[in-house]
Every structure is written in C-alpha cells, then in structure tokens.
Amino acid sequence: MTEAVDWSMASRVAQRVAGSDPLAHSYRAGTLASDIAEFTPLAQELVEAETGWPSASGAARARVVDRAGWVEANIGSFQRLLAPLLDRAGEKMVGPSAYVAPKVAAAEMGVILGWMSRRVLGQYDLLVTEPGADPLTDGLSLTNSGEVVGDPEDQDLVYLVGPNLLALERKFGFSPREFRLWVCVHELTHRAQFTGVPWLRPYFLAQVRELLSAAEPDPTRLFTALGRLAEAIRTGVNPLDEGGLSALFAGPEQRAAMDRLAGLMSLLEGHGDIVMNRAAGDRIPSSERFHEVLSARRSAGGPASLIQKLMGLEAKMRQYEEGERFIEAVEAKHGKAGLDRAFESPDTVPTLSDIRDVDAWMARVGLGKAKASARR
Image (cartoon, rainbow, N blue to C red; front, side):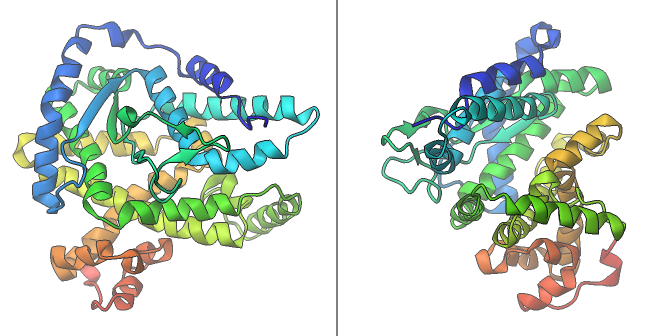
C-alpha cells in the first residue's frame, strides 16, 4: 500500500522552513532546561490548586526542544492521529498519483509545520498511546499492517520550544525565570484540562474522528466551496474568517464538528489564559506584560496575518479573546460554579455560537442571564 504522505520529505521541508536560531547556543540556553525541570512540578501544583483538577496521568513531564524537535514531535502526532484516514487514501493511490501525491502532501505539510515551529512557544501532546485502545477515542493509531505508530515514552509530554522562548526573552527584555514559569503554567493548564476532566479527551478526539470519517475525496465539494466563497464575498464576509481554506471545503457534517471543536477550543484557550494569570499569583509580577505582548504577537498584521487566515490560525487567535470574554461573563454572574458547568459533560460544552452568545448558553444549561457589565 502507498503511503499517502512522504513523512521523511515533510520533515526535511519543515526543517528548512523552520531554519535555525543562534540563540539556541547562547548563554541563556544553558539555564533553560534546568529552569523548565524546576518549574514543571511547581506549575502542575499551582494549576491543580487553581482548577481543582488533579491529573489522572500523575506527574507532568516537560521536554525542551529546538524547532526541528518540535517538528518531529508533531509529525509523530499527525501520523498517529491521521493513520486511519491516510491508510484509506493510500489504498486509492494508483499509477502516477502514487508517486506524486505523497510528495505534494509532504511539501504542504512541511511548509505549514516549519512556519508554525517559528512561532509556537509550548504545546501539550494529548495523544497518549495505550496498547489495545481505540485508535482515536483513546489515542492509539494502528496502520493496516497492525503496527503501532508512536512511542509511549514520547506521549503525554509538554514541549517547550527553546529558541522561540529565548528569542522573546531577548527581544522584549523579559525576566527569563518569570517568563519560563508563566509559559509552563499555561501549558500545564492544558494538560490539566485533558487529564483532569475525565470525559474531555475522548470527546475532543471523537470530534476529530467525525471530521476524519467524513473526509473523502469528492470533486463536487470544490464547486460547493467556490460557490460559498463567491457568496461570502458578495455579502461582505471574509470567507477565511472561520477556519481558513479547510472550512470552505468542509461538508455539513464536518462543519458541525468544526463548530463544536471551535467552541471547545475557545473555552480551553480562554480558560488556559485566565488560569495562567490567576494560578501563579504574585509569583510572576510581569504576567500582565507577558499577556499583552503575546496577545499583540498573536494579532500581528502583514504577510503573517494572511498566512494565518489561509491556514485557519486566525480563527484560533480569536479563540483566546472570545473564550476569555465568555468565561468572564459567566463568572460575573455565577462565579466559578457557573463556569464549572461548561466542563460538566459534553452536553454542556459551549459551541462556537454559544461562545459568542453567552446568554443563550446559560439559558441552555439552566443558568440565568449574564450581567450587562460583564460584556466588553
């Protein structure tokens, strides 16, 4: 069977796009790994105290990587996550396409991963490998030959991209130890969400499975997408605002799953930012400045903004702001107990429309209306 993606080529392209940063060899780099090792258990303790969610996976593990290491980790995650879909695609590749298509896919994926590796600071890998588990609901991926994709020792890790952390510390004159703890708290918050809320990880992966199960080559979707693009332009709506090019080519089932995922990710990203600012308290005096700088960096204009829109990352950037506004509105009326309803079960998770209409969500889950003053 033909591999649908030439993963070796994807890695080579990504690493060329990612480039190298001499800061990785600077004097600051010498303390980075030891600081992260020190701050990881502290960040887990602070986050669990703030959220009340002890991790079912035990002690957190963090790994400082360069951009190439981040690329390799994400290629591994994509291989595990996309294995069922890519196996189906590989079975259909015959003739010249069996040679050309995997290389085209590799080039596209390599450019995306390489570009992202220059911006990301940290990431929690939630695809935990568990022998005998379901490929998507429990994180294990199997190829058609029955081979397990992924090393268990490389799972349930928090990755910190060293060159990018060091570059921001130098550019903005950040206190290294404060900034490193701040980033650790943010990433450990995401780990707490997926390991401390029992239903969350299976629910998230189920939505991904729904997207992948509907993802079959269908030429008619091209014409549907072009029609959607033309209609959006006529009505003055930016067709790339809601998920990039992938949203244009999604069918009805995929768009519904994308809406559920967008609502969940807005909740998680907004919650991550708020917990990050609260959990560390006065341990990080510069946290407000860190937050302002990173918010401005997310919304930077110019060519990067276009790339973000094409890739659907612009929508992700808005998730932070919309998620924070949603959480603030709920807490203004019902406190932490009200927000806990959003994490109660899959039925109470806000959709993207709920995130943007907090009163509708509170009515749906049996809470009262938010105070008008809670909106911004």
